[in-house]
Image (cartoon, rainbow, N blue to C red):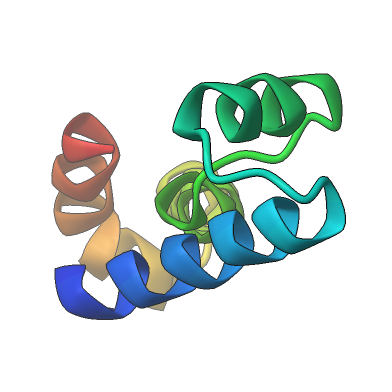
Length: 78
């Protein structure tokens, strides 16, 4: 996903919290996000991707071994 798409998702999440708690304060929204354990969209997407890349990297499958170096590079970035 592009950065603008992540920004749009985060904006929608923040707007929802603003409406639910009837506030315009970003500080209040940040506290609510933390209390409800709401992670940013980037992290939500990165977690399953990292899990998949770890499985590819650790697999004995010949095809997975072909891509293991690239998977390790991607994991280093995450």
